[in-house]
Length: 225
Image 1 (cartoon, helix red, strand yellow):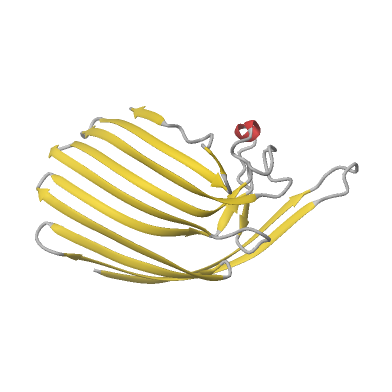
Image 2 (cartoon, one colour):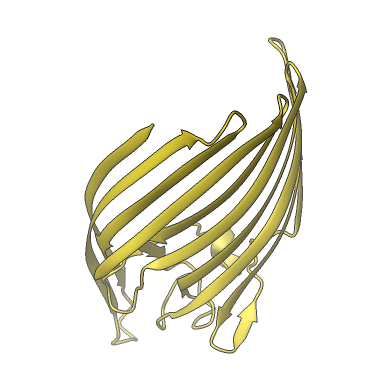
């Protein structure tokens, strides 16, 4: 199976910070961010139990060309087991000027996006590696496990420049790293659905020589229902 496509979009974003009469300084940032992307993806079997998906995209936006390769391989050693490995490079053409480290963030959750192309706003890039396994021993019952590793560059960081709930004195750019695992079990039937999921993750953002753990990066989480 081969899939191809194109996508064209344009976003207009504006960030305005107005002070009262005691301060003569206002902040006004705006961006027009056109993005045009083309992609191709092919999936094919490499045998009775192995499958491969290869794809790539080329995106023009944010003042340059950005290549986004993707690869995924699937192996079924048994009828009830599937093992998957993947890699993907992704780009983000708009970033938030909200400060998620501010205690006011829970009261003021607006993201305040600004597109790449505004003064100092880069295109963020992430490389994500993942491996997953799924086991289905019977009808309606499944167990899953997955692990991931993500490297990010060009991240817009408000916290190193300001303690306010949004950017007031400019912002910084930095890098990020996150890794995690998740385990889940699921049982469903026509009359009920039961699920339990555990997640562990470790995240860290870096700006120049300093780094910190994001406030929203819970190390352990447990869900059930």
